[in-house]
Length: 207
Image 1 (cartoon, rainbow, N blue to C red):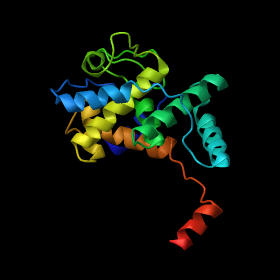
Image 2 (spheres, rainbow, N blue to C red; image 1 turned 135 degrees about the horizontal axis):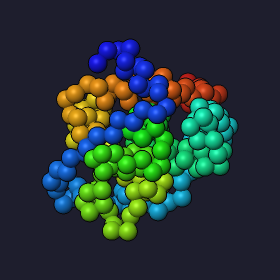
Image 3 (cartoon, one colour; image 1 turned 90 degrees about the vertical axis):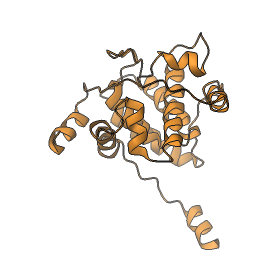
């Protein structure tokens, strides 16, 4: 697939490239840790220490998402949940936004030909593997929690190799198309540079 085509696909709002996450046997300790992660009941919030930076991030991301999700209240709810779930899983929220763009085109009720569901296109077998029978993968927070937990799990398996972790997430390990699409969407549409605050400068000089 050419670089030009990859860039075009990443920029197309209707494009979705959901794959088929594969079930892999896991140790009981891993299963328990993943179950605890998806069972989190904390209220989503922007985990950004500075209040001004919280406002800036939300306004910037909301502006970029406006064409895909016109409702400002739902847009804010989605972005806050993405930031919370990504951050608590140790992921870059902008990476997760790029993944959602590629996987579902920000369609809450998207279903792939393989049966993957929701914003992050989570396969239903994960409910039995690490969740509860009543978990609904079309529920915004549940879908994001599962998706971020699963990607973190794959990153741990691959010792931080994002390229291979994304391949696992999409069920296309070893193939370049999907990781390249996610990275292109992340960098082109969702890249964000946090402001360097004066307090940060003082902290750096003190160290």
